[in-house]
Length: 448
Ligand code: SF4
Image (tube, rainbow, N blue to C red):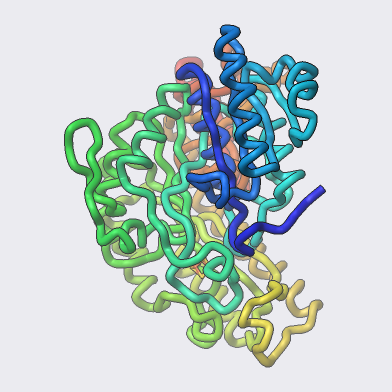
């Protein structure tokens, strides 16, 4: 069963979290994942489209408290998903409260998130969502998405995010840093910072400070990046727009505080198409800016996404884009063929590009992107680098890992041979022995 949201906006969840610090970490992980998938949270029952109750079942009194909390949520809201320790006693819960939508036990993140998707589907937008439409699975415990704001002040013509999620609404810095700190304490090795417009973070709050561990931290992109970097995990920045103040953050990359990786959704480079898209960037200044960033931080990897076949895109516009991608040396490029999004202004634009032309441009762009990627990766051969292990293939004695230049799900991998004794979540030192279009090949540094 699915339903539309009460407000007609981003789906909203109310969360009641009972129990010990471990249950709190569970709640935090569930919230982090759902937030990354576009859900918003409501502080009261009335504003929520459904309520998640994370229960405790350790003592009888805690069980009773949990059952009461479920009852209250059912009375006040009516749509309730139960998870946590008491969830192992599903029969007992259903006897008392037959109308709960779903029940799962402690640490069953996938089951909770799956139940939320079933009863309150997310609103995906493939042009702007990092978390892939098909990949609404929970991240492994060694990395986590950290959403720093909701909504967006831009009005790109192909996008309905501002209609669905409203204008930019940043979380106070202390709230983001506390969540990140709890994740790192619970074993997260990599924080993937996301929002719709990361470099605009805090603008709506007028960069207000909030108290964190006895000091005031400003809701400002640079300050937040530095604070997160100081937690000791990898910090990867997604959806950064090339505004001038990003230069300062690139300095943090050069000094190793945050990863030398910028995900900038350029979407196009031709001035005509950018104008039709109503994008907030100027292509020439952007090229200069990327060059400057590479001077500040030579190790920088730039990832971007592009849309081909936008209404009105001519062959000339497209070739301009290809040249621009080459000149900017976009290390990692993703591409979508344009398709209309219901409710978007772009649907009214003239000059619809035929499907076969879109496909042809997609293939040509990916060919150029592949050549650049292969060239950039070949420069890494011979280097000794740190990698984070995502998976192991014991029968091949191989670890599937990522370097600081690879975001999970969307970029390449580092395939490490002779990886005896290595586990997912390990951070190991490897020497790069080879490369191809998207991946690096390596062996543990000690045995090379
Ligand atoms: S920057 Fe543009 S594409 Fe991205 S969320 Fe805002 S309006 Fe949508």
